[in-house]
Image (cartoon, rainbow, N blue to C red; front, side, top):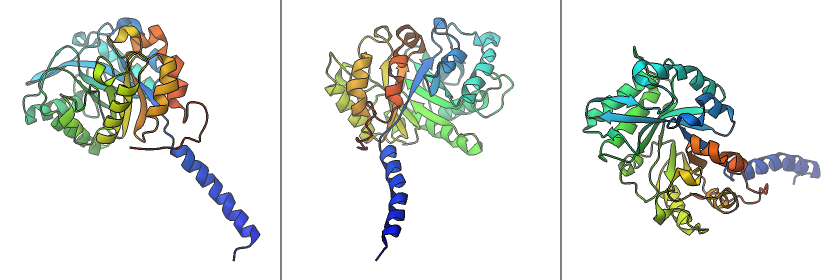
Length: 317
């Protein structure tokens, strides 16, 4: 039989372990934001210096596939054709020095892109590796900076071979630098363009667009459709972390804007019950600057619980 002193010693060991379990079982998160489509949104460096984001996604590569050289379009910030975007090298490295991941997004709501075959997808991946990631090229559009990964925001064109693109990009992680893969599907499940790619289970981050999609988004004070869709995505999609994609202001989307008080008081407590909760994604930095949305919600997105109460330890898939 253990002595009283032995029992006391065991208790002192178990208490910290129990506290660690309680903290770990409540989900913390961060904010990802798209940057690059409005020259009025400020510099990339100022975006990272705000302290509001853990991931910044450069938007977009608007032309790729069918044997075409991928084209970078950072509207209002720099002219790729004259080499002007190489000036972003310093900003990218400054962001990364703060621990912020910088990704490059393919696609968007306008442009000309599609993948015509398996080899076409592999060629696009090879170009991205050589020109934006850890490979080598004589004319890297963003200079010597090595981005952290590639985002797929596929809303146009064909639906095939994005699984091949994602797998090929992911395979480059074996060359030394981890290549993070993310996706921005629409909230109707499964996503029409990225469903096959997401079924691979290799995505690090998935930020589901819960806007401009009335059947699965927040509407007029009712979070029921949003909750049902969130639970579907977090239970059916294998990904390291899933983010709730939101418009940063009423001007950022036609529908789906969630007032900050509703997000922090109703939506986040629901979302954080999933072990896959990663935080929120905002479209976009320009609208966030105008509305100061991330300023209002970031502490609630990141905190282990919205009200400082660590008693809610539910962690479900």
